[in-house]
Image 1 (tube, rainbow, N blue to C red):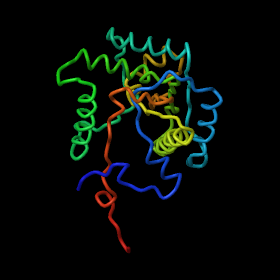
Image 2 (image 1 turned 60 degrees about the horizontal axis):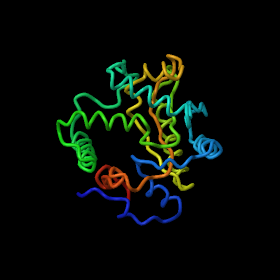
Image 3 (image 1 turned 90 degrees about the vertical axis):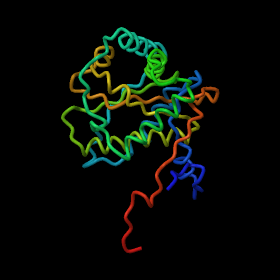
Image 4 (image 1 turned 45 degrees about the vertical axis):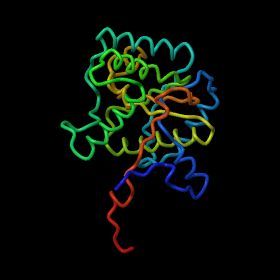
Length: 235
C-alpha cells in the first residue's frame, strides 16, 4: 500500500489542518521571532499531559549572539574532530531492521538528492551537518533536556510536549524542525552551555519562518496509512 501524503487527507477542522500542515523545515528566513512568542509557544506546549503532572521538560532557548556563538562553537568542534562524546541515549536499534531501515534510507536519499549530495561525497555531507548544527538558519534554537534520573514514561510525556510546540507554532504561522542531531554531541553541548551532567540532551528544536527558496524544503514525506499499522476489532 502506498504511503499517504498530507495532501491526500481532507482536514475536518482547523486543528487537523494545523496537524497536516506541520513539516520538518530545513531552511529558515532570518526574520526574528520574539521572546514573547517563544514564551507563549512553550506555555501552550506545557499543557501536554504528563504522568502525575511531573512535567519533565527543560528547555534552553537561544537567539541572537548566544545562538550564533553556540552554533559556531559546536560546528568548530565537529569539524576539528573534537565533538566525539558518549551519546546520552540510543535513538535507533542496532542493527536497524525492516521496515524501518527502508524508511530511513528513503528519506535520507530523497533529502540528499534535493541537496545534490551523492553517495560518498563526504565534504558535502560534513557541510550539511554544519548546516544542521546551525539550526538550518532559524532565528531561535531550543536545546531540550531531561533529568537523567527520569524513566521511559517521562520520555513519552516529553514527546507530547515537543509535538505541542510544533503545532502551536504552525497555528501562529511559524515553522519548526525537531533535530535529533544535537543528541549526538552531549559533552560538547554541556561544555558550551554550562549544563550539568544530569541534563540529558534529548534534541534541538528550530523555530522560525520557512525559506521556500531552500531546496531541502521541497522534501515531501509520506506516512503509512492506519490500515497498515492498526488491528481493528469490533468495528
